[in-house]
Image (cartoon, rainbow, N blue to C red):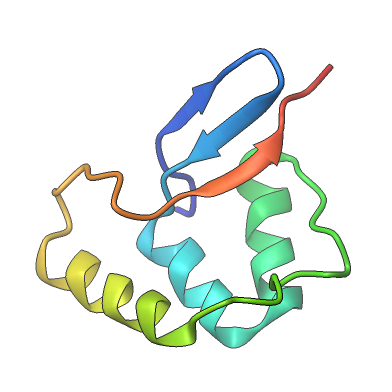
Length: 84
């Protein structure tokens, strides 16, 4: 679907992105926001992507997830505010 593994701390969430989330990230902010809302019930700020965003890394992560779909790795993650 679009979720990944999630680790929740007191003030933030670390979300290991799935292939669907990575693909949405590559399409653009609106697609990314749609997947984040659908899979994690989260809103994405208008400032997304961050200033130092590196598209090449995201494309590499997509290739890696396509080659190793069961990797269960945390080589890339999204950070979000934890629900209050």
